[in-house]
Length: 48
Length: 374
Image (cartoon, rainbow over all chains, first blue to last red; front, side, top):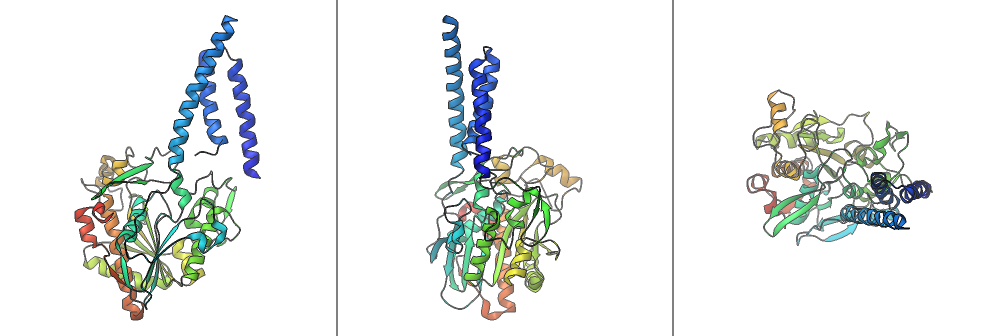
């Protein structure tokens, strides 16, 4: 149960970062978003 | 329109690069989830899994290989565990050497080289440790994982605020993932507690008389180069120490504190009633005074910062220009195991374990541990 809640929280944040990535126009902001999104996706898949 | 296309293309490229980096990172992480092969000697009589003793571990990351060398005749039943702490490589490698070399003519030897299998799937955070190290053998280079002291948090999460272990001791939160604080385990507890429970079940069902848990510790930590013994194993440990000193190996004796609960050398003795001894050797990749941690430091054990610390009298072990290579540490473990078994047989002659092929520690030290791996 805790794992599902954890994944839902990470998914929620990952979606927000993805939306931010799509809306941003500045390259460096987008790059920062990709780097953070990458870590969130690994977390979402429980790859560590 | 043109601006949108440029933006869309830029975003797509960034996502593609991010995806590629993610794939590479995920592949590297996931490669740690695969156990390195162990090639048992022809003397192996049975190989099973810890879940055979406690089905609650089946299909979990806590399940692990169990190698049994059974003469079918009289003698002691002995348990040897390595990899309780997967960041202590000599304990793990020593157990692998035992599996790959021995036959047993009397008694029974049960070896669990990766006691905390989950701990091998990740390494300690914020330590910049290498994930693997290599040992050259006659058949080529063998690669082993350098894991974490604790169960992988992906497999057991979250940690409680404070942890009261099955023996009733209150500990820091992360110790809930430390196998050597979770004995005697809980049948329906955290994963690490279930692994501990599985090992206790193994001890019960294999009728183990004597357990030896192989560990390492940092050179600046006082309990090092030591035999840590349960009260009931004091004579065995003392006789083993004398025999080791006769051979020129200095391992100090440390009594297992009665109020330090949840450790193998305490709970194997208290809860299972067996003789229990933990062996510590110095591990140069574990402490705080070392320099950069590399795979060669794991194997060669040479570090200029430790050398400086030794000259300043800050270490609890002798440390010279040649460092403390893994071959030396494995040799010490093997010598300790042999001395403990011999001491036990001296005290209880009907509990002798007669080996064929058990590596001579002096040869391991001289020829390197790779000469004793397949």
